[in-house]
Image: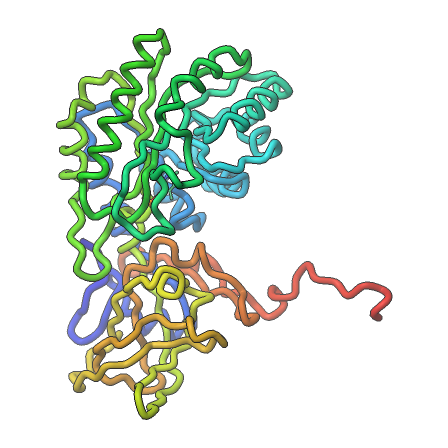
Length: 419
Ligand SMILES: *Cc1c(COP(=O)(O)O)cnc(C)c1O
């Protein structure tokens, strides 16, 4: 459930008509609903209320400071994948003791930064990284709390680009080699083994792959215990999907019930969860204005001011994003491609989509754009990145200013010899 709804013929974010935001802030522009962000966080957190757990919101899904602050206020932890994300969550007021650090390519500097801040856990993804972290911790005069991210070899049945827990994937350590690496970790003097981690993919719409992964990881926890490891955390990653089109993903409570029902509640671990998309995905839209219409012999194009540099999911994954007119007109529908101004044929927001006829100057809302939207945006074609707006009841706040033309060339210099 989300708070983007029509009031009469006007699509609103909570109590604010989207047309007002477009007129005052300009387009393209991301709009997030604070009530939706909070609701999604609470529903997810409550679903695991029966067991000791910590929700570590996956920052990469949407890393705007205001969004991070809203979650920090809810008591959320954070799952980060870079030093940049660590900087962001600290700036947003995160408790370092609630931060887990994932990713296969942590640099020494990033490790040192996270060690200095005293984060909760490093999710280590290779033997080489284990050695590097031990080294970094020695240098920092600390012990690094470690979980190994294991690859349970489960097919999450999602898009190949966001499948991460299969044997051929670059992520994690083969679960069959995990014991060996845990034994080695225990001999490294500046590491402290605290848990087990896995994350099998994103946009999963079925609980079966989660359950398969869990049963394998659970087996590993028991094996480790038998060898005297003090396994305190089971980090089960993120990946729960949302409805973009006609998917029917499990509700958080069904997801939680499936996991807990499989004996997780009796494992005696603190459960860490790293949801991203399920919390923020449907809490945001991309607001865009129609520039032109162009009918060719075979196609009708609606050319809008938002493009693949603003929202790359359709171009990158062939992803479906619902599109709705901001003002219902009652006009007849036609099948159109909604495309942006970028000079690539892959620059589309929708293909062969039935939409009510829209005229230049009118607004469209691209739904489900709160996750992997702005964060994946770029300056391709020298397009300033869009503004981000957070709606709170009847008020709204610009939480990231639209980039300016000067922003586009900031940091670039022309060498003396070319002057
Ligand atoms: C991307 C990612 C997540 C979040 O995935 P969602 O599908 O957005 O829930 C969680 N953990 C790790 C390690 C990730 O890479």
